[in-house]
Amino acid sequence: MAINESGKRVTAASARAHTRKSKNKTPFLFSSIMIAQIAVATSVGVLGWAYLALLKPPPPKVCGSPGGPPVTSPRVQLSDGRHLAYKEDGVAKEKAKYKIIIVHGFDCSKDMMLPISQDLIQELQIYILQYDRAGYGESDPHPKRSVKSEAFEIEELADKLQLGPKFYVLGLSMGAYPVWSCLKYIPNRLAGAALVVPFVNYWWSCYPAKLSNEGLGKMLAQDKLTFRIAHYAPWLVHWWMNQKWFRALSIMEGNMAIFSPPDLELVKQLSAAPSPGQEKVRQQGEFECLYRDMIIGFGSWDFSPTDIKNPFPDNEGSVHLWQGHDDRIIPRELNRYLAEKLPWIQYHEVPNAGHLLIHNASYCETILRKLFTG
Image (cartoon, rainbow, N blue to C red; front, side, top):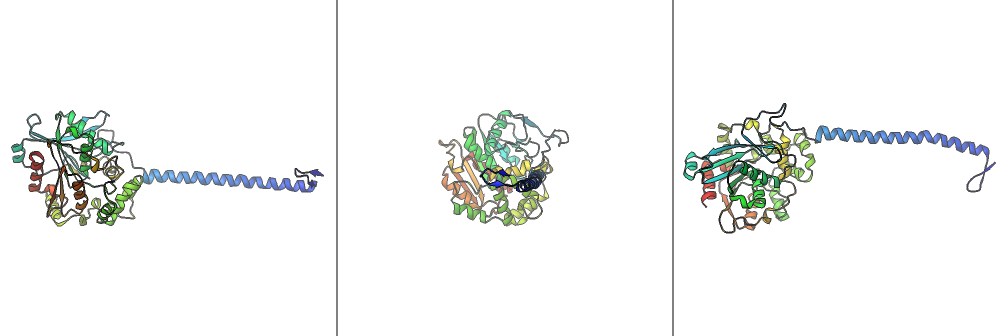
């Protein structure tokens, strides 16, 4: 007979029974641990597969790399080693009175054709520079691209091409957020700026909640959800844009409901004479151009447009914001609000015009004349 730790007598039989129970529990304990380990490993494996297969975008097909698209346009090499592709038009920059950099919008490129007449170019002596933003066309992707980096890319491009100390910038739609960036980070390099049907971020802190909610509420349901995913869950964007269960971004599926009647007329004209090089826009991968644009544009910014100070306090230049009254892609109320808060911006709301107003030759000429000559 033995005595246990509590001082109670334990018979040999009960001790043997206790030993047998302990031995019986041991395999069960080991089995439970192994099952838990296998479950955890399986979960991690499934999550890893899901990330690689569904969430992680494929690597870009960089122009000029093995297996990538060829380089067919002139390019400059930036200080970080990446390249920007560009196209020049108008008079020689050495003779130009006005030098302008035009920043293309979503799903577009430097090859975008604008109705700028040769008569206007010669009259005003305009030099025009267009470039592919990072990841678009033939410009290298920029995995750390941000709102801020857009301004410094424009500045470096201008310096590489020797445009001089000051130049004009014009941003179209999504290409307007690089112009906001220029106004914030390199105002000393600007001779003037134009924001044409400019992109708006519904989460800019300057907007009253009611105003931004009303503006977002005007969008198609599929676009509202896509914009929210880009803002709140950017890591889901690649999956969301490629899944087949729900409709994603309307403009990428060719939904004509986003265009107003004035836009539809221009769409017919543009379809008859499409811009050359459109097939190159997404050639390096949709994530590096289109999806990254949405993630950056609708993400959290380091500043709000109303934080920007007047870049031309002595009226040595001007900033213009052009908004189509019938624009169904950009709610006019949001850009009108910005213009009210920034009195140094000259606001132009064009009646009977939509999102494509710059493709109207008359409006295009007016926009450039206002920018250059006031």
